[in-house]
Length: 270
Length: 270
Image (cartoon, rainbow over all chains, first blue to last red; front, side, top):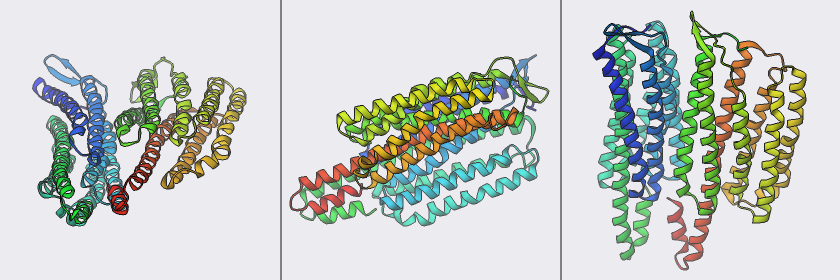
C-alpha cells in the first residue's frame, strides 16, 4: 500500500516526472535534428539516442499519469486512491532502452564490422539480462528475495563494465584526439549513472521505508534516467561531432597528400 | 463474459500491451529516420514498415485502453467491469497492416516493375482475404464455426507461402550476397510468426478456456505482432542496407580505374 504523503512530497515527485518528460522531448528533438551535423556513419548512433528518449518519454508519461491516479488529496494530505502504482513501466522501459544505450556507444566508435556486431550483441544481451533479472527482486515482498535477485542482476553489469574498461580499452585509445577523452568520460558517466540504480534498488534493503523510501526511489530513478539517457546521448553526439571534424580535416590532407593510402588505412583501422 | 483474473495475470497483459506500444513507437522512429541510410529505390519499403508500426501502435493504444476499461479491481482480484473487450481492433489492424507486410517484401526485392505490381497485388489480396475470412471464426460462439472459418482462412495463407517459397525462389536466388541470406531468413520469420497466429486462434478449439486461454491469446498475439511487424521491419531495413552497400561498392569500383581496389576497401570499412 502506498504511504501517505504531504503536499510537498507528492508535488516533488509529480513535478520531477513532468520535468523528465520535458527533458526527453527536448533530447528527442536535438538528436533527430542534430543528425545532419555528423558524418553519415555516426547517424545510426544518434537515431538510437532518439529512440531511447522517445521510449523513455512514453514511459514517463504513463508513470506520471499513474502517479496522479494513485493518489487523491484528502484534507490537505495525499492518500492512496486504491489505484496501484505500476513499477513495471520502468522495467519495460529499461528492457528496451538499456541495450540501445550500449549499442549506440559501440556504433559511435565505428569499429570494424564483425567486431562491432559481436560487441553490440554481447553488451545488449548482458544489458537485457541485467534488467530482466532485477525485476523479480523489485516486485518481491521480502528483502531477502530482493537482495538475491539484485546480486544476480549485478553479474551481467560487471560483465558490461569488464568489456567497456578492459576489452574496449585499446580501441578507445585509438580514437582521434578529442574523441578519446570524450569516450573515456562517457564510460565514466555510464558507470556512475548505472551504478546509481543499484543504490536506489538497495534502499528498501537498507531499511529505508515508508514515504521517505518511496520519494527517494522515484527521485533517484528519474534523475538517473535523465543523466543516463539525455546526458549520455548528448555525449554520444559530442563524440560523433569530434570524430566528424577530425575526419573532415583528415580527408582534406588525404586529398592533397601523396601519401593518401597510408592516411586511408589509418582512418579505417580504428 | 471475461473471466476473473489475479493481479499478476491482469498486469502481465497490461504491461505487455504497454511494451508493444513502446516497441511500435521505437520501430516507427527507426524506420522513418533510417530511410537516409538506404538507396532511394528501397525507401518505399521503409515507408511501408513505418506505416505498419504506426497503425499497429494506434490499435495497441486502443486495445490497452480497452483492457483497462474492461476490468476493475475488487477486493484484490480483477473482475469484468461490464465493458466488452473488443476483438475487432486486431482484425482492423491486420486488414491494414498484413497486405503492407507482403508489399514491403516485394518492394525491397526491387524486381522488374510489371512483375512487382503483379506480385504485390496478388499477395496483398491474399493477405487481406486471410484476415477477413478469419474474423467470423474469431467472434463465433461455437468451436465448429471457428474451425470452419479458420480452415477457409488458411487457404490464402497457403497461397502466400506458395508464392514466397516457390514462385519467388529464383528471384531470391539472384539477390546480391548478404541480401540473399537475409531474404531467405525473413521468409522464414514470416512463416514462423504468421504460423503462430493460427495456433493462438486454435487454442479455444483445443479446449483451452477461461483465464488461461484469455491470457495465452493476448500474450501470443502481442508477441507475434512485435516479431512480425518490428522484427520483420528491421530485417527489411537490413536487406535494404545490404543491397545499398553492394550497389555502392559496385559503383565505386566501376568509377575508379587505377586505384579501384583501394577505393573499394575504403568504402567497405564504413
